[in-house]
Image 1 (spheres, protein in one colour):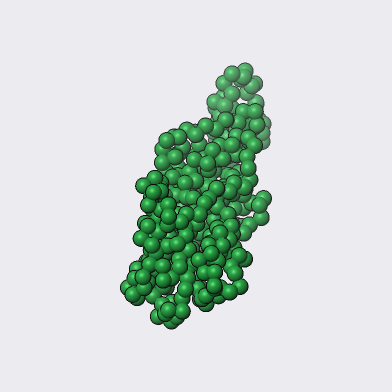
Image 2 (image 1 turned 120 degrees about the vertical axis):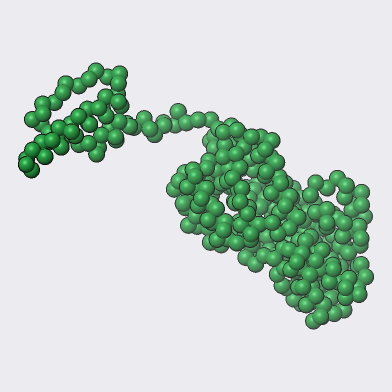
Length: 354
Ligand code: AHR
């Protein structure tokens, strides 16, 4: 009985193997049917492999040329904490819509673990390229390695990462240290006789906050003392209580404030107003150059606004296409930025794009 079963199985497997070979290569002449007496040659589990020869792996010459409409880009946005961020998201979505790029967008709500999960989902889906605006600088090595292993290039957008440059294809964004230097120069001009100032810093551990803090300290005159520095996480909601606490603690000793973005500045101004200060009593240097920042200059609360450009969609998509098509590209692209002052604020405000 057992022997009969074995023979029956062998016969079945033999028939299976022949039909697989026949399906895989219908053009080739049918091989001579092996004698039923040679069942050892039949390996049905290997048959599908034989049916899909090396042709599954395209050679370089056969690789497709990407166009915008065939490119899928993953954009795991870090959050929606500020007007700057809203403009950055709009820039990516609008550019993708105009060019026909398939954009896989997500919002990590300022949490690195959410950004990493979103990146992993994109890697699993086999996107063509990832553009990553990292919420903080550290902790990207593992997921960058995973993207690299999957052959998916990564462009670091906006803030920087602390990872070896070989882990990603390119970076596009602002020079945050330079922004801090510009802010320091402005504070020097505003307080020629020196004085005590406070700093409302961006998200702790972010390239934007560390870079701006570094550049600011580098240029600040010795007669200006930073008496306190606290994070407001780049949001209006947190900027206000941080400034309230500063005012409660130091009161009229505060002669100036370096605020790492316009949203926190707007929150801080509410606290300054509520404490009875007049525009200009505390000299404010802010960063971004959003419409809200411009309005604060028109109203006299902000004395200088260092630009940080969020409209990175078009340049990033062009860069992505060059990377995917093996064309020459810049590994580091820094956006051109200016400093704005109250005297031109009213005139420029209507033309601000964000
Ligand atoms: O990384 C850019 C910074 O992030 C902007 O200055 C700020 O507004 C945003 O939240």
